[in-house]
Image 1 (cartoon, rainbow, N blue to C red):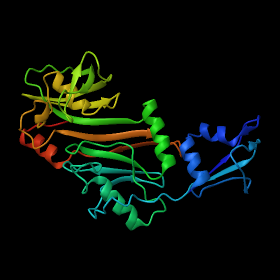
Image 2: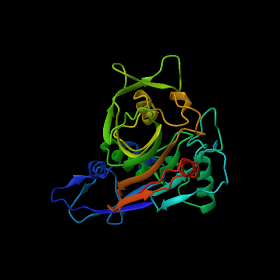
Image 3: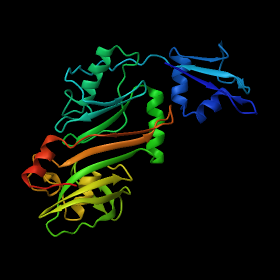
Image 4: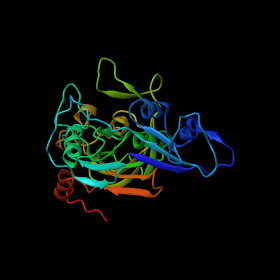
Length: 301
């Protein structure tokens, strides 16, 4: 894969420093240098110490990215919401892990994406997960199709310019949730548990969740949630700390009135780092959440 840039600065600058401004890490630059890539200026190969002059055309050629041999192929079709040469956004169903782990070594979304890349014959076969979801959470996942795109999105994550909105159904028997509010409570791993988290006053990671109430129904509220930090189980832990666990989230005090935690990543929004256009993708509520609304006769305007 090739990327071309025209140097516009008046003062000369070494390639190694200019590409850092483009978002190229030292590791990616090393891959270009030592793993089959190429750096050219005005169609002539140069090293990273070369001083760029105004008007120079810099071309970066990245080496091919091979797939991980230990990942198996899963031919289950993907629900693709957006794709270009840099990114892939897919709709993950509930019940499917995002990535392989010891408990789920195969049958994950990554296995499905690997098979998709293989059948499409893409130059880059490595799967780069930018945003993942818990196994029983449905909704949008963002993947980068090459290392440079992954590095660019890591910057977006750090700068909090990648916006994700979730829909959650929470138990709210006492109607404690406000129309619009923030939940600010640090989160840490619960003692003697490798999975469960809890809020805390010291020793945890800062976490901030914003929500707007979407609907109110006896014992249940629907909320639209915006994460301002990305802690493990953040939405689930924060609403549980208010006495409003997600429907079906038995790990955090929810009842079993729903077959899973009622949580869905509904939208992703970001400025495309290569085209500079805004990308906003939405995913409809999954069938189980739609059925719940119908069964409870909840009508949303």
